[in-house]
Image (cartoon, rainbow, N blue to C red; front, top):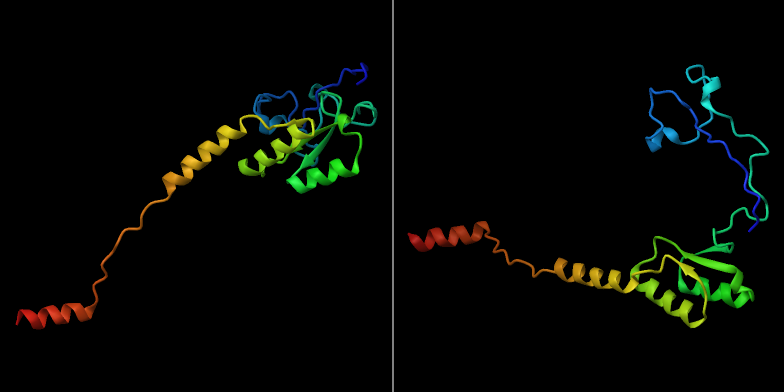
Length: 161
């Protein structure tokens, strides 16, 4: 990673520094291009983003550790990537958030076996334990319901007469 860090201005969109919409609220602090006659750009609203504010090409899209991030959705995808690419020491793997705990365990075992680096693999065993407890608590014995039909009522009426 290079040490060329620029002083980036804050790009507040829409309402800038105005107090009508608070900049502390994440919804209003996001950048949106000011379109229309109702949202005009004023001097106090900070700068507009334009060419020249981008980061260095060498450090762009890198993980803060300086490695290239690769998203993994399943174990075969990870195995294929490792097989095709020799330089896995320059890569850090991020497991997708949609991957469940059981599959994460398999991925974690593969990562440790091949001495790879992966993010968001912490507390996988605890997550599996809690999921198993939740599954056991959800499984209940079905309740038996006796369904009475009109025929049963007729038989009871005849028997009582």
